[in-house]
Length: 287
Image 1 (tube, rainbow, N blue to C red):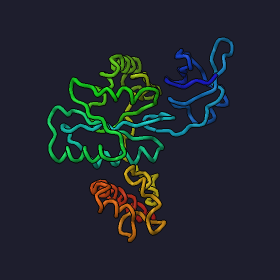
Image 2: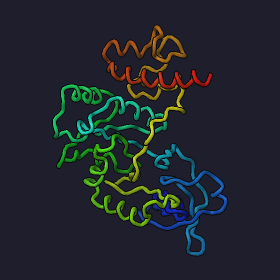
Image 3: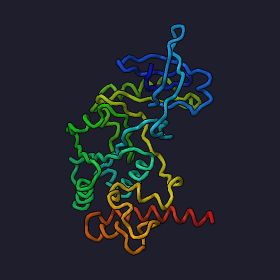
Image 4: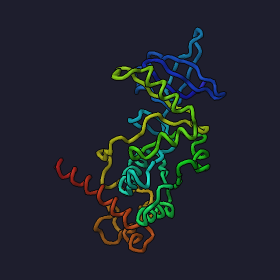
């Protein structure tokens, strides 16, 4: 049968079958010599002597390392309007990393009931006018479309600490908090040798229980490919005068022209340039 790994605790695997049943499984010896299985992996499993045995890990479309999850459909960037303040720089940096991993980014803006400054409102509207899906939420009111976005997908949540990631999940699925609490008790504090990796059922989908992209690491991205990971740049990629254009100071740059025409927000290009400079400085150190 084909099933999905939804939980890994040490060497015990929980599989989710097509009919919704969850079963325990162990790894066949030859699979242990491959990449370590991740939550989200699709696998071939067989019932042998009343024990499900994972025979093969099927090809992945992507994989994250923090959390260790495979076949992620979307990453929801959770950003509050205040406490902590909204940061377009962080949104753009996370979006670049998410797209580079082959995952679709979405933006969820929280605490909208606490009052939004004119500058923050304009930043949010720039995203709403752009290609990334944006959802606004406020205390006591949950945007209905958020639940439908999670349905049938594997999602991770990332963003600012204190922006309300756990609150969102608890409102969507009240059992989520209880489940993660029970896991913490079972594992115990300080027992880092026990590997635990799980996808929780939330609103008809599966959500990783740990935020992704805990470090903003651009070491795997080259200056040439960076522009391809900016969602607002996508329609203009390949339209610059020079094939090796990095959309910085080159003449005939389609992206800079779109910025000057007000089609791409100026701050989106500025945030891109700040990441580009980080990558270029790193390259210079290697030379």
